[in-house]
Image (tube, rainbow, N blue to C red):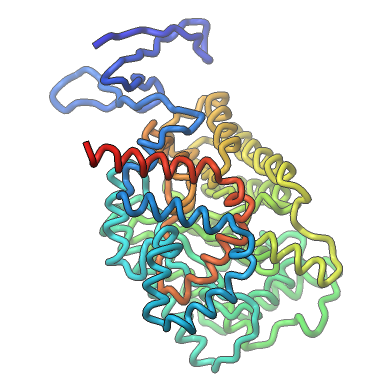
Length: 511
């Protein structure tokens, strides 16, 4: 084995440090100077974990797709080809409707599982996703289990009992997801939840409008502290109503009567708080964390408020139980992030967040056009990228201001330039590549050539692994195609690497 010592200047002093390169079987490894030393039980010397050097061009398809079998590689290539065809993407709901009518429900489900559902979704049940979880973990990628149920403001008519039953059912499914994550992945992993699965969308929308009219929402009563004090329901509801009314009057806002809370609305919000609290408590008991996903802007102020309130109560220990989400395609993303960083410092809890570009761009722009208001979305892809990088910079500055243990940020991006930007900033801020302060995430079935390359080089890497009934997940699949059509149209690299890996697998199997 040939060993070469490479000298580079230390960022902390004028003394030169050494990084050791070792050539082993055509792979280049470095002896990590960043990783925390691992002490052998029977020896006094320190052993540092070794990782391959990171290929920042992300061309290593052998690493990216080795967790996939041959059929899955071919399917991935074909799915990317199909999703790059505008006609199919623009008319997917009509095509789905006719396919279901022609094939029938059973054959249609088989077709969907063999194509898009099979590529982007882990399965329908916890049992179905366990083999995929094991494969991800075997390649140093942690799954974020995502029981993908959500609602939108379409005005479906259900009885109150049906609605309560559905929301309680979803709560139990999220808790089951937490237990599955603990049992299969072990402690200190993540699951994702959507708030719209736990409350009627029109009530959440109303709550969002009212919260938007309050300048400083951090002055409202600490919701989850009250919930956990086991106060009577009517007292909590009355206190919330009184506080909201007081701040609306103080801020001199004129809320339309149609937006004002009714008593049953407040009861539903209280039930939402109880459901969220049950989920958070299950996380604490199982040592699993929650990722509160972002949704449409007419829900997002309320969702973000609830996420920060959960953090305010549950992120007081050394473990960030609750993570929020910031959509960087929004024009006010930086303002929202900056405000929440200040609140986290004020109340001394761990700020934990995921940065994303956003998944509802077409819907948001369409609503803005139809209702003649300014779109909340950044005008260009470049503006969104700049917003993303600026938000990340703001979090890094806060890490310097506070103790590093009080801040966590996840780079949830499929964009190579953004990932490279984050890696460079980690170096500038002397954040170890395997630190828990900064992690990386992407969706299952997308950008594997980035995720598995990062994981192979020791970066904390996650894959969002959605699962659930096919019917519930169809909106998710449609959105993946619609919102990522630009990615799919330009996904020559993803298609090419899928095909290269497939050819390589087939060629090796013949020899």
